[in-house]
Image (cartoon, rainbow, N blue to C red; front, top):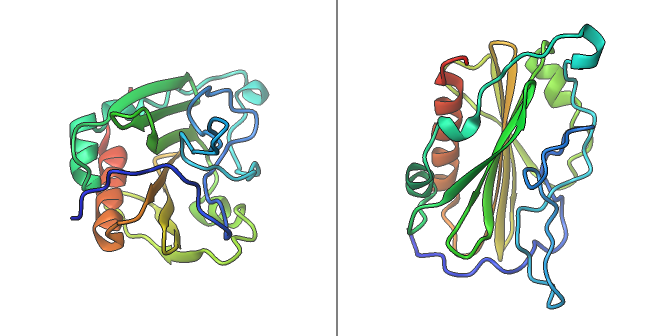
Amino acid sequence: MTERTTRSARPTGGVLIGLSLAGLALAGLVLAGCGGDDGEATSVPSSTQTSFPTDDPSATGTVREVGDPCEAVTGAEMATLLGLDGALSGESAGEGNYRGCSFTDADGVVVINLTRYASAAPFDEVWASLGDLGDAEVRELAVDGADGGGLIVAAEEGSLAMTAAVAHDGLVDLANFYVLAPYDEAATTAGITTVLERLVAQPAP
């Protein structure tokens, strides 16, 4: 894959397809694309989507430990799967019913976020809650061990953004990826699919 050395601009137009969870206090996990005075982005763009059906621990008085996504894939493995040079650094966030991992490159730019939360909702209900995705392409995603999976792709001349989701074992795993051109869409799709397979196979805590 062609080496990617610049990730400094957010996509222009279209849907910003990052997935953010309502009431989720995962500082630095699902990040809005933000930067300095020069407008350079330092993280993965996120949408305002907040309607995912989740199990509210306050409603049942119980908290299900869902496991840390950072433990499913190392930074070196993630970089290889995404076709990037050099290892990425993973940072965990959240606890209990909600956990996540942000992977950053050597420049401190977030390349991909992984988010996990407990949910008894079937996958089609989770997916339907996304609502209007604008011009983004929606695909089914087959992931070994998952009850259902889907991929949202916003491929533009200058950037590639992907959001993938799978449901399994009463959990939902999300992968939120963004990179500037040049990129290899097919290879990235395969890499993110493998990441989700690793998440689905991760042992319960």
